[in-house]
Image 1 (cartoon, rainbow, N blue to C red):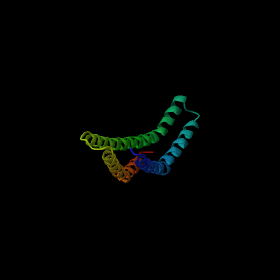
Image 2 (image 1 turned 30 degrees about the vertical axis):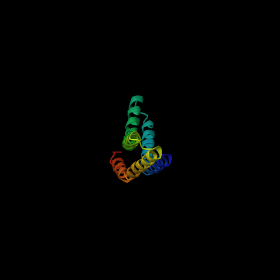
Image 3 (image 1 turned 90 degrees about the vertical axis):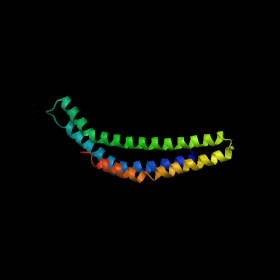
Image 4 (image 1 turned 120 degrees about the vertical axis):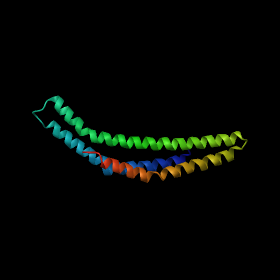
Length: 138
């Protein structure tokens, strides 16, 4: 993918992830640490009981991180498929006898379209992630 296009995607995704981290994940981390600390302040419980308590405290955050990771992987997979389609189109054009500047122009245009299409998916992905994160029981 052209470097400028890759930078556009990377910045947009980083901005989205930072927003999710600040507005959702960080709060969940705070709850997890407070919950874990409370588990450790139970003098009458066994080591195993305290460990299980801490595990329960970690579960919501682990689910949240899994959701975000899964969505980002799906986004990356879709973008990769789109750019691979561009590679196929460029190869077909080159194989039909087109010169390198025409192939490069097709590739640049196609990749730019892929990036634009996928950047337009980010707002709905953000809404979906926020809804999912909000639905995780604390």
